[in-house]
Image 1 (cartoon, rainbow, N blue to C red):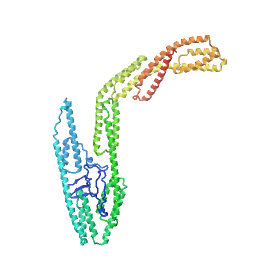
Image 2 (cartoon, rainbow, N blue to C red):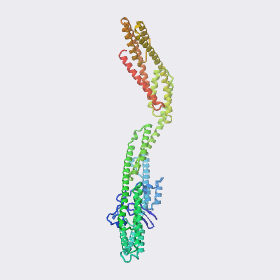
Image 3 (cartoon, rainbow, N blue to C red):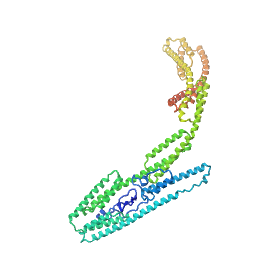
Image 4 (cartoon, helix red, strand yellow):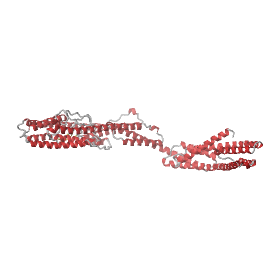
Length: 632
């Protein structure tokens, strides 16, 4: 059986059929960095062959993922199960397998089991409450499947314990074999007279030492240190052909120079995680390669160590930045959860309110998607928290729309009745009474809630068309009076022009000619209110000029004063009637303004036009009131 381990802190990854792939190169001081720490207490020869630290660090209690890779639990297939029994069936299939992938899946299945159990219990309690039960008296039924769950988890626990036991036994066996090989190497290296005859045997022992599988991490440094010492002792004592020794040195130097060059290239690599992984492989290759000439041993080792230090430093900085980004993402996601939870759903009582709130929720979801992973410690909990808040929102929204459908149908019938009444009044010519009736209908329309969206615009257009038909007819009828005022204005303009011409030729002007123009002026009716004062001021200026130049004072002036008093009484009554008419028009505009909104295709333009007319009416009404108060 092939057993997989994910204890990267201890650097043993796989053992299969007594074959181990070990990377006892690093001392883990931080589970995010896995920084290689070089020993500075060994001499150059020992440093060359002993890259491990003298005291391997213990692994942290919880293994964290490196860089952006996912743990075994993150990579399992999140299958959907219909029942807790299906979950237990899957757990029974894999409970006896001891590897990290199965461990992650079992943790996921256990979490899913209890979550499903909680949902069932909640449903039972809700049914109990719906049946008029007292929540305080509710007692959940015992979980008849939980004993089976615990049995399966115990099976997994036992399997993992057996796995660890087998691993420890294998480590102990390998340690004994390596020590036995080292003892044989020591015998050969210590006998200087026989080292020449034992060359091949010594090389075979070296090969055996390297082929023996992994041992406990605490033994690795000492074994390799002893191996290097015996190897150096053997070669130093070896009386063989110098050319052969130099050849081995040159060959080893070339191999180690190539490793140095590759390591130096990795210091500039963009993928710092991949560079760090490759560095581990290089250190393994470096250890396997034999020694180089004593004159270059320290130089070549320092070169490789410098490149290793730079790669380790970049690797550490990368994971510090990753941790900082994960923290920022955690803060951002927590803030989003708090904002969603702060929305008071009880205050949303309209369709528009729910639509606006939905836009807000969707915006939060989009913001969530843009944020990366938070730290593994809280990422899953934050997602569950956010999803639960969103689910709660959309569930309550669905309940609201379900409840308003019946109410909207009733509102539709009420609005249809108002449309029919407005259509009956649309042809009336009783402007005052019908205006009041339509305003009352419009006010009643406002009190009715929304109709189904399918018919909302259609029924509104029908009601608005009936109202518009009446007010358009009224506007056309009242508009004739305004046309007369405009014609009077033009006639008085002609009289002012004639008086102006007489003023320019005052030598030929006569009092009779001026009085004729004054009589014509008096016979002309009202002009537009906004033009009256300006026109009257110009007229008075010209008449005062002629009174002074043509001596038209005295008796004629008294007669004119009498006519003005009579005209003033007449004008006062006319002003009062006009004020009443303007007040009615303003009231009509104010009531219709509420209906010219976004529901109308030209709502914005009509509202602007209506508001402009209302401003003109208010100004004209204010001026009329002042004139009436002043006794004009």
